[in-house]
Length: 171
Image 1 (cartoon, helix red, strand yellow):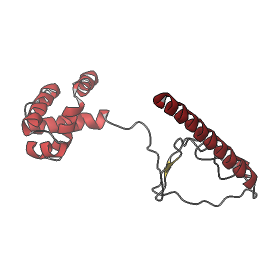
Image 2 (spheres, helix red, strand yellow):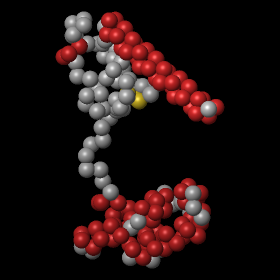
Image 3 (cartoon, one colour):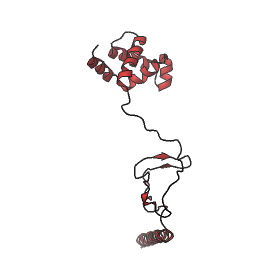
Image 4 (cartoon, rainbow, N blue to C red):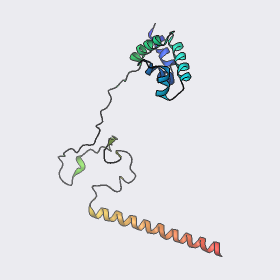
């Protein structure tokens, strides 16, 4: 058959049919495929029958052979997968103390590294720009005082609102 006809047949296969055809390549029965993907056996049989029709074959074995041939041609990754290490590693740096301006941060490059001890780094953190590790003591103190003043303003406003509501209800 022509390449165009092969591509059309490959394109007509649905994801659900492919989910049934993939285990078929491992010679699984309809019952095993049904358990594996969480559907009923008749549903698997129906999907495989429709897939056989799309592939233009008569038997399950022929469907598996034809699907494997098309999969080898059309189901390829077009790029090399990126390797992300399982754990974050401490890497020695060569910048002078107090001058990390020459270091490229992973968050600037939008790379997420999963640490074994905590959450995923590199994802958006709302306090990341405010509470950074490279702030000096005076800057941290100023930030804490600003937060304290904001908290006091919120508490004061809440008390004023509650007092006004109490007067309205009792008055």
